[in-house]
Image (tube, rainbow, N blue to C red):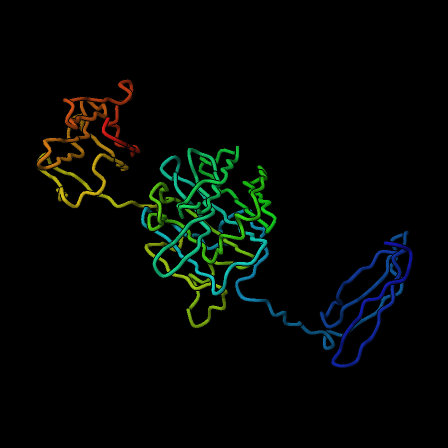
Length: 376
């Protein structure tokens, strides 16, 4: 401040008074012993009080400030005062904008993983129609890192990769992390994980062809591609273009004032233990059979299986698949605590075993993915 004089305006009804003070001295604002007056005083360099002005509290009032619904300043460091959403293997929230999204696009969210079991897509910016959902921006948790994938429709109208950027910060440490993403019409985008910042740029024609109008949070298996897994874990403080989206989940629909329509499935508002679609096999004779008709099998020759399991016994079959009429089979099981694949695809019997030094009968959850493409 300078040595000039400054003014504090005191407004009482329609009359305006002015209180004069000098920044040469410190300003002290206090109240009297009876709590009926506010005292404005200057303190000299020697600590003495000079030029005191009294204002009765009858002349003071609280001015109401009108704040747009769902708008909050983002400065939280902890999650205790936030709306926390627990996402399971089939949870999702689908936010469909009432118009197409305007640039620059800015979003932020706080999240917490459950280790490798949380590998999957947190958020995807999409073009949504009545019959399809096409993802163009995928923000994914994979092997402890956050990765963003930019997609476009090629000349064959198929999704193709434009670029992929991975942040270097490890997020598998049982802590809350803050993710921020921003992209403008020039194709410049930035992703921030806590204090780790990555920037890149894509061609502007990619953006103009997107027509983004929706934000999908959680389960991604409804997308037109099956290469992405759903996120399992916790999210909080989802803010998109200054709108606090999770507020609508705890507000009556009649009172929601938002630029988005939304639908949701299997979400849990609150901090809960994330669960999965669980099946318990309790006896040696327990089984589940999925019948697959040969003439309706459009994916013959392709195999893509993903599941989680835990076991307390060292031997047993987990999954068995038999192609009727082709004399082919495929089985996954435990032998002496080691995961083993038994198969015959018409070229003779084969076995593939996992790491023999690691026993999987410890009662902990283990993640398995088996992929076969072609006939080999």
